[in-house]
Image 1 (cartoon, rainbow, N blue to C red):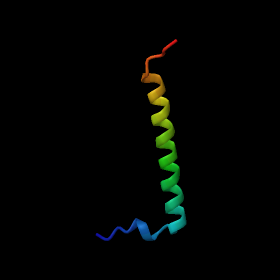
Image 2 (cartoon, rainbow, N blue to C red):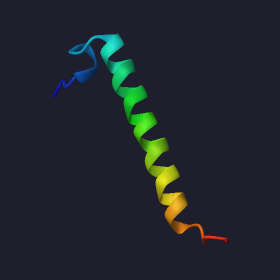
Image 3 (cartoon, one colour):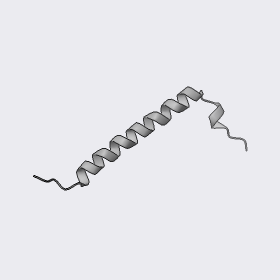
Image 4 (cartoon, rainbow, N blue to C red):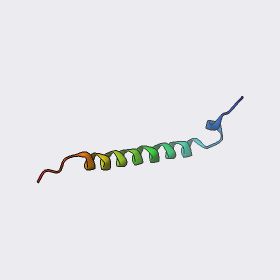
Length: 41
């Protein structure tokens, strides 16, 4: 079985998807951290 998904999409699109996933992960982690952090008044 020869499944080579890497060669089916352009490198720039692969990079753009990687950056988008990275930014979404950072944003989700930040928001989850804000909810878990006890609020100090």
